[in-house]
Image 1 (cartoon, rainbow, N blue to C red):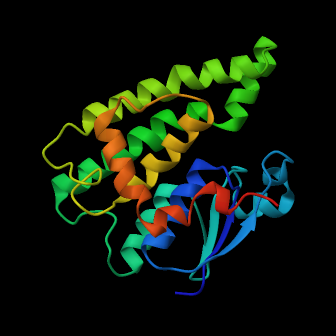
Image 2: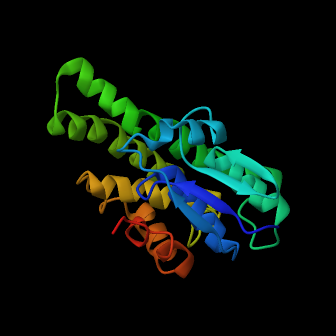
Length: 213
């Protein structure tokens, strides 16, 4: 595998997921920032990488891939252990279910362009943004808390090693904290988060490490 080039925004949940996965796989990568606030995602250069005008996009193995979960699954299929998706069918479905509950249900409605559109329609400002985030993030994490009440939950979302589900959970909790959404009472989620945050792979992917200087 050639050294990946990740086109990313430091606070992007989707990019954060991929950074964690690359680190867990032990794959060094070059990071190219795409400034979402400045509209760089709509530049002709980036639209050629990703016609959706989203991040992340990643160049590896002579291809440009988009969509964070597809990238993580590709990494799992093309690089050695540690595996981020189990090989047993039921376990694989559970990890994907947890991942999708975050990446496909919580994250999309809290996307930057969605919240901007809500504010444009309502004439709202920062409080509207915060209220919108609270309306979707906290209930979504509460659902994850319930899904973690399962015999297969271990130190991590599934078992005792991180999976794609953990790659999705930690960025979503970062977003919750960013919007002052308390989740400390969700004990299973907090316990899994502590296991993740103790690992260098998660620490090295944190947005603070990629914030513009």
